[in-house]
Image (cartoon, rainbow, N blue to C red; front, side, top):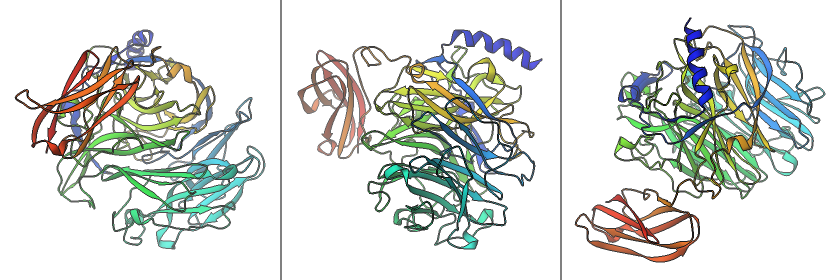
Length: 624
């Protein structure tokens, strides 16, 4: 009966296709839970006056595996699982397993689209022994390659399976051994770059102590990088711990909280989670030299379980990166909240927000509220529709987030598992799995896949697109998306649907059932809905919060201008006296930046007044 009532309820809102931003209560937002595989405390979730519309679309979907029983496709972030080739063919992978509960048959499930149809669902893994966590890429002129880790097998290390002609022939398998038997490799990430995608880049974690491994070179779970230019026959470098990732800076890394992408000679590694910096290592010479950027600095470096901390907002460990056509990296990341006491660490399953950053922007500080996605935090370095780009939608338009409040224990935020694509004209598409109101099984809330578009990263379409809002997914948990790095008029992703939220593998209120692995083909124009003809989201112009704030030296203010005008700025103190002036200059439509030196001001509270033609907007800032 519950499901019948739910169906009637949802049908009323599917027809409307429009919503406002939901207000999340303090109780929801402050609800925390201890990680038993971390603890979760929940925080008051309150995206108050949502102004974004929700658009429902019905993409093309194909089920490439209808009865996968192994429902944990990743612990946090997702590997590269799908590639769309220039000739219209597609290769897609997933973790396969049908023999619960030990899953002795576990390995890489593979399916291929020949330009006309997908092949039959696989009945076995592609490897010879038990593996997991596949990462898939184009290899060579017309080939394909897959990397997975051996687990519970007679073999240790990573399996590298490849073939010179995609979609056909026997997979050629080789073993990439870990640096030592007690530091076996787990949870790899792999991509290809260089000429004709012939250079293989792999990162993988040495087995942590909790999984039966050892501390390796001072790190409990070390993140190592290797590169091969001959299909995995030889590796140089091999098992490299970059200095920035060494024990001088970190004491541990968590599984599946990192990913790697390549574009020719550009290679980037993104890593981070609730108890570690969110940071990027980037190479522009094919992986020979690297530069680090700390995107969000963790307030508790070298944290170990049992440390006592305050509660702080953080990156949740699920994130994604992509290169644009100029080689600049764009990042999407889930947001959560955390704290720790003597009993363990805690996460907040209903804290909700999706962040965005690119290399042209300032980084985030280690302030406890730097990544706060709510307007009532008093301080945040996130700006809505600029660096805060995703949140839960108010589908029934009553102003509140109407959910049961019990969600699958993925140990991430309510809007998370993001995937980001930058296409060949630098259009940016972000897809994520978000807890969605009015969709539940009577016990737990479901996640849907949502999407949003930006033509440049500076502002985002004023519609949120529910990719799985059709009747087909009324009773589906839609999770673990992996987006193809290549696209045409469409973008493509592989994901999992499950009739129960959460994970049977982890015993999360979820019995073993048939889970479907699906490939979705999404018309880009349907995700671009809400883009105005003048390519600007507001009527006149808008002023973003200065960054950094509080300021002690150089700080900047971004101003989104609709038409050519004169732009200037005045800074006034609490008495209304002008204390600093930025001279007017002529600017063109788009995002403009005003930079000034706050060290010239006495510490205190000030207002900066941005003047664009005859209009003025003021905002408050703090000078330290």
